[in-house]
Amino acid sequence: MARSAAHHTGRAALVSPLAILTGLTLRAVFHLALRQTEGLIGSIIGLLGLALAVPDHSTLSRRAKTLEVPRPQPRRNGEPLHLLVDSTGLRLCGAGEWLQEKHGTKTRRSWRKLHIGLDAGSGQIVAASLTAKEVDDGAEVGPLLDQITGAVASFTGDGGYDQDRVYASVAERHPVAAVAVPPRATAVPSATAETTPTQRDRHLQHIAEHGRMAWQKASSYTTRARAEAAIGRFKQVIGDALRSRTDDRRATEVNVAARALNRMVELGRPNYIRTA
Image 1 (tube, rainbow, N blue to C red):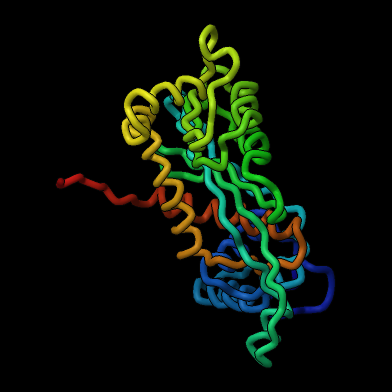
Image 2: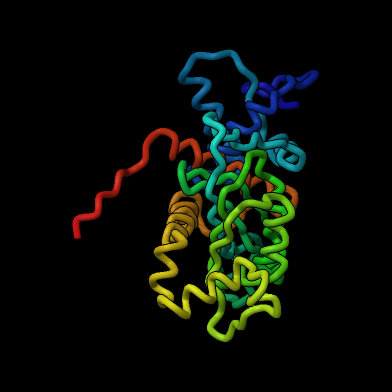
Protein backbone atom coordinates (compact mmCIF):
# COMPACT_ATOMS: atom_id res chain seq x y z
CA MET A 1 0.00 0.00 0.00
CA ALA A 2 1.18 3.53 -0.68
CA ARG A 3 -0.16 7.06 -0.63
CA SER A 4 -0.63 8.92 -3.89
CA ALA A 5 1.84 11.54 -5.08
CA ALA A 6 -0.32 14.29 -3.56
CA HIS A 7 -0.67 12.37 -0.24
CA HIS A 8 -4.45 12.54 -0.19
CA THR A 9 -6.22 11.25 2.87
CA GLY A 10 -8.20 8.04 2.73
CA ARG A 11 -7.44 4.49 1.77
CA ALA A 12 -3.99 4.07 0.27
CA ALA A 13 -3.50 2.74 -3.21
CA LEU A 14 -2.27 -0.82 -3.77
CA VAL A 15 1.27 -1.01 -5.11
CA SER A 16 2.31 -4.03 -7.16
CA PRO A 17 5.46 -6.07 -6.43
CA LEU A 18 6.84 -4.85 -9.78
CA ALA A 19 6.52 -1.25 -8.62
CA ILE A 20 8.35 -2.08 -5.39
CA LEU A 21 11.05 -3.93 -7.33
CA THR A 22 11.47 -0.97 -9.68
CA GLY A 23 11.78 1.44 -6.78
CA LEU A 24 14.35 -0.72 -4.97
CA THR A 25 16.30 -1.11 -8.22
CA LEU A 26 16.50 2.66 -8.61
CA ARG A 27 17.66 2.88 -5.02
CA ALA A 28 20.42 0.31 -5.56
CA VAL A 29 21.74 1.71 -8.84
CA PHE A 30 21.68 5.39 -7.82
CA HIS A 31 22.75 4.82 -4.18
CA LEU A 32 19.71 6.55 -2.71
CA ALA A 33 18.08 6.67 0.68
CA LEU A 34 14.46 5.52 0.81
CA ARG A 35 13.08 9.06 1.00
CA GLN A 36 15.21 10.06 -1.98
CA THR A 37 13.92 7.02 -3.85
CA GLU A 38 10.35 8.08 -3.16
CA GLY A 39 11.12 11.54 -4.54
CA LEU A 40 12.83 10.18 -7.65
CA ILE A 41 9.89 7.90 -8.46
CA GLY A 42 7.49 10.81 -8.03
CA SER A 43 9.58 13.01 -10.32
CA ILE A 44 9.75 10.34 -13.04
CA ILE A 45 6.00 9.71 -12.90
CA GLY A 46 5.37 13.47 -13.02
CA LEU A 47 7.63 13.94 -16.05
CA LEU A 48 5.82 11.11 -17.82
CA GLY A 49 2.45 12.70 -17.04
CA LEU A 50 1.07 9.54 -15.48
CA ALA A 51 -1.60 9.35 -12.80
CA LEU A 52 0.03 6.62 -10.73
CA ALA A 53 0.45 6.19 -7.01
CA VAL A 54 3.96 6.69 -5.63
CA PRO A 55 5.10 4.16 -3.01
CA ASP A 56 6.36 6.08 0.01
CA HIS A 57 9.60 5.30 1.82
CA SER A 58 7.91 3.33 4.60
CA THR A 59 6.14 1.13 2.04
CA LEU A 60 9.39 0.45 0.23
CA SER A 61 11.05 -0.51 3.50
CA ARG A 62 8.19 -2.72 4.67
CA ARG A 63 7.68 -4.52 1.37
CA ALA A 64 11.42 -5.13 0.94
CA LYS A 65 11.21 -7.55 3.86
CA THR A 66 9.05 -10.05 1.95
CA LEU A 67 9.61 -9.13 -1.71
CA GLU A 68 10.31 -12.12 -3.96
CA VAL A 69 12.89 -11.09 -6.55
CA PRO A 70 12.61 -13.13 -9.80
CA ARG A 71 15.51 -15.50 -10.40
CA PRO A 72 17.36 -15.80 -13.73
CA GLN A 73 15.70 -18.27 -16.07
CA PRO A 74 17.49 -21.45 -17.21
CA ARG A 75 19.25 -21.36 -20.55
CA ARG A 76 16.88 -21.54 -23.47
CA ASN A 77 19.05 -24.02 -25.34
CA GLY A 78 18.96 -26.39 -22.39
CA GLU A 79 22.74 -26.64 -22.13
CA PRO A 80 24.19 -27.01 -18.62
CA LEU A 81 25.97 -23.96 -17.27
CA HIS A 82 29.52 -23.64 -16.01
CA LEU A 83 29.27 -22.19 -12.51
CA LEU A 84 31.91 -19.85 -11.10
CA VAL A 85 31.73 -18.97 -7.39
CA ASP A 86 33.34 -16.28 -5.28
CA SER A 87 32.68 -14.22 -2.18
CA THR A 88 33.40 -10.76 -0.81
CA GLY A 89 32.63 -8.58 2.19
CA LEU A 90 30.03 -5.80 2.29
CA ARG A 91 30.06 -3.33 5.17
CA LEU A 92 26.92 -2.27 6.99
CA CYS A 93 25.81 1.36 6.87
CA GLY A 94 24.20 2.80 9.94
CA ALA A 95 24.51 5.26 12.79
CA GLY A 96 28.09 4.20 13.42
CA GLU A 97 29.12 5.37 9.94
CA TRP A 98 27.48 8.77 10.54
CA LEU A 99 29.17 9.22 13.93
CA GLN A 100 32.54 8.38 12.45
CA GLU A 101 32.10 10.96 9.67
CA LYS A 102 30.64 13.66 11.92
CA HIS A 103 32.77 13.36 15.04
CA GLY A 104 35.69 11.19 14.01
CA THR A 105 34.49 8.45 16.33
CA LYS A 106 36.11 5.10 15.69
CA THR A 107 33.70 2.21 15.80
CA ARG A 108 34.11 -1.48 15.15
CA ARG A 109 32.93 -1.90 11.59
CA SER A 110 30.36 -4.64 10.98
CA TRP A 111 29.97 -6.43 7.68
CA ARG A 112 28.35 -9.36 5.91
CA LYS A 113 29.70 -11.81 3.38
CA LEU A 114 28.24 -11.92 -0.14
CA HIS A 115 28.44 -15.24 -2.01
CA ILE A 116 27.69 -15.34 -5.73
CA GLY A 117 27.40 -17.97 -8.43
CA LEU A 118 28.11 -16.77 -11.96
CA ASP A 119 27.22 -18.36 -15.29
CA ALA A 120 30.57 -18.38 -17.11
CA GLY A 121 28.84 -18.29 -20.49
CA SER A 122 26.31 -15.48 -20.04
CA GLY A 123 28.09 -13.55 -17.30
CA GLN A 124 24.90 -13.42 -15.24
CA ILE A 125 24.69 -13.90 -11.50
CA VAL A 126 22.49 -16.99 -11.20
CA ALA A 127 22.80 -17.43 -7.43
CA ALA A 128 23.50 -15.09 -4.54
CA SER A 129 23.33 -15.28 -0.76
CA LEU A 130 24.26 -13.12 2.19
CA THR A 131 25.68 -14.59 5.38
CA ALA A 132 27.46 -13.56 8.55
CA LYS A 133 31.16 -12.86 8.14
CA GLU A 134 32.05 -16.01 10.08
CA VAL A 135 30.40 -18.37 7.57
CA ASP A 136 32.92 -20.37 5.56
CA ASP A 137 32.74 -20.25 1.77
CA GLY A 138 32.44 -24.01 1.49
CA ALA A 139 29.40 -24.08 3.78
CA GLU A 140 27.44 -21.88 1.36
CA VAL A 141 28.00 -24.02 -1.75
CA GLY A 142 24.87 -26.08 -1.15
CA PRO A 143 22.52 -23.08 -0.78
CA LEU A 144 23.99 -21.52 -3.92
CA LEU A 145 23.48 -24.71 -5.93
CA ASP A 146 19.91 -25.00 -4.65
CA GLN A 147 19.06 -21.69 -6.34
CA ILE A 148 19.97 -23.04 -9.78
CA THR A 149 17.14 -24.76 -11.64
CA GLY A 150 19.10 -26.04 -14.64
CA ALA A 151 21.92 -28.54 -14.96
CA VAL A 152 25.48 -27.64 -13.97
CA ALA A 153 28.37 -28.91 -16.10
CA SER A 154 31.21 -27.64 -13.90
CA PHE A 155 31.90 -25.89 -10.61
CA THR A 156 34.93 -23.61 -10.29
CA GLY A 157 36.17 -21.83 -7.17
CA ASP A 158 39.39 -20.72 -5.54
CA GLY A 159 41.42 -22.62 -2.96
CA GLY A 160 39.00 -21.71 -0.18
CA TYR A 161 36.59 -24.28 -1.66
CA ASP A 162 39.09 -27.15 -1.40
CA GLN A 163 36.93 -29.09 1.04
CA ASP A 164 35.34 -32.53 1.05
CA ARG A 165 31.90 -31.07 1.70
CA VAL A 166 32.18 -28.91 -1.43
CA TYR A 167 32.80 -31.96 -3.61
CA ALA A 168 29.98 -33.77 -1.79
CA SER A 169 27.52 -30.90 -2.26
CA VAL A 170 28.23 -30.71 -5.99
CA ALA A 171 28.06 -34.50 -6.45
CA GLU A 172 24.78 -34.72 -4.53
CA ARG A 173 23.02 -32.22 -6.80
CA HIS A 174 24.91 -32.63 -10.09
CA PRO A 175 26.65 -36.03 -10.14
CA VAL A 176 28.37 -35.55 -13.51
CA ALA A 177 29.59 -32.00 -12.86
CA ALA A 178 33.33 -31.40 -12.91
CA VAL A 179 34.85 -29.60 -9.92
CA ALA A 180 37.81 -27.31 -10.66
CA VAL A 181 39.21 -26.21 -7.30
CA PRO A 182 42.98 -25.94 -6.79
CA PRO A 183 44.20 -28.29 -4.04
CA ARG A 184 46.20 -26.60 -1.32
CA ALA A 185 49.98 -26.95 -1.40
CA THR A 186 49.96 -29.46 1.48
CA ALA A 187 47.23 -31.63 -0.03
CA VAL A 188 47.75 -35.41 -0.18
CA PRO A 189 45.87 -38.05 -2.23
CA SER A 190 43.02 -39.97 -0.65
CA ALA A 191 43.36 -43.55 0.60
CA THR A 192 41.65 -44.83 -2.57
CA ALA A 193 43.74 -42.80 -5.02
CA GLU A 194 45.36 -45.91 -6.54
CA THR A 195 42.15 -47.84 -7.10
CA THR A 196 39.26 -45.37 -7.38
CA PRO A 197 40.70 -41.85 -7.60
CA THR A 198 38.45 -38.92 -6.84
CA GLN A 199 38.34 -35.70 -8.88
CA ARG A 200 40.67 -34.14 -6.32
CA ASP A 201 43.09 -37.07 -6.68
CA ARG A 202 43.17 -36.55 -10.43
CA HIS A 203 43.87 -32.85 -9.89
CA LEU A 204 46.80 -33.69 -7.63
CA GLN A 205 48.16 -36.20 -10.14
CA HIS A 206 47.94 -33.73 -13.02
CA ILE A 207 49.67 -31.02 -10.98
CA ALA A 208 52.42 -33.42 -9.93
CA GLU A 209 53.05 -34.49 -13.53
CA HIS A 210 52.57 -31.23 -15.45
CA GLY A 211 52.63 -28.39 -12.93
CA ARG A 212 49.96 -26.11 -11.48
CA MET A 213 49.85 -23.70 -14.43
CA ALA A 214 49.21 -26.57 -16.85
CA TRP A 215 46.43 -27.83 -14.57
CA GLN A 216 44.78 -24.42 -14.53
CA LYS A 217 44.69 -24.35 -18.31
CA ALA A 218 43.53 -27.96 -18.68
CA SER A 219 40.73 -27.57 -16.10
CA SER A 220 39.61 -24.13 -17.39
CA TYR A 221 40.26 -22.79 -13.91
CA THR A 222 41.35 -19.48 -15.44
CA THR A 223 37.70 -18.66 -16.20
CA ARG A 224 37.30 -17.96 -12.48
CA ALA A 225 38.62 -14.48 -13.22
CA ARG A 226 35.14 -13.70 -14.57
CA ALA A 227 33.71 -14.22 -11.08
CA GLU A 228 36.27 -11.80 -9.70
CA ALA A 229 35.27 -9.32 -12.41
CA ALA A 230 31.61 -9.72 -11.41
CA ILE A 231 32.51 -8.94 -7.79
CA GLY A 232 34.38 -5.84 -8.97
CA ARG A 233 31.41 -4.80 -11.13
CA PHE A 234 29.07 -5.23 -8.15
CA LYS A 235 31.17 -2.94 -5.96
CA GLN A 236 31.76 -0.42 -8.74
CA VAL A 237 28.09 -0.09 -9.75
CA ILE A 238 26.20 -0.93 -6.56
CA GLY A 239 28.81 -0.15 -3.93
CA ASP A 240 30.59 -1.96 -1.12
CA ALA A 241 27.98 -1.31 1.58
CA LEU A 242 24.51 -2.50 2.54
CA ARG A 243 22.00 0.27 3.35
CA SER A 244 19.22 -1.85 4.87
CA ARG A 245 19.03 -2.33 8.63
CA THR A 246 17.77 -5.93 8.92
CA ASP A 247 19.09 -9.17 7.43
CA ASP A 248 15.91 -10.04 5.50
CA ARG A 249 15.90 -6.61 3.85
CA ARG A 250 19.63 -6.90 3.17
CA ALA A 251 19.02 -10.20 1.38
CA THR A 252 16.42 -8.49 -0.81
CA GLU A 253 18.85 -5.62 -1.42
CA VAL A 254 21.49 -8.05 -2.69
CA ASN A 255 19.04 -9.92 -4.93
CA VAL A 256 17.74 -6.66 -6.40
CA ALA A 257 21.30 -5.52 -7.09
CA ALA A 258 22.16 -8.83 -8.78
CA ARG A 259 19.06 -8.55 -10.97
CA ALA A 260 20.02 -5.00 -11.98
CA LEU A 261 23.54 -6.08 -12.90
CA ASN A 262 22.18 -9.00 -14.91
CA ARG A 263 19.99 -6.61 -16.87
CA MET A 264 23.02 -4.47 -17.65
CA VAL A 265 24.90 -7.53 -18.87
CA GLU A 266 21.96 -8.44 -21.11
CA LEU A 267 22.06 -5.02 -22.74
CA GLY A 268 25.69 -5.35 -23.77
CA ARG A 269 28.95 -7.10 -22.93
CA PRO A 270 32.50 -6.30 -24.08
CA ASN A 271 34.24 -8.67 -26.46
CA TYR A 272 37.79 -9.54 -25.47
CA ILE A 273 40.39 -10.42 -28.10
CA ARG A 274 43.76 -11.76 -27.09
CA THR A 275 46.55 -9.95 -28.97
CA ALA A 276 49.62 -11.63 -27.53
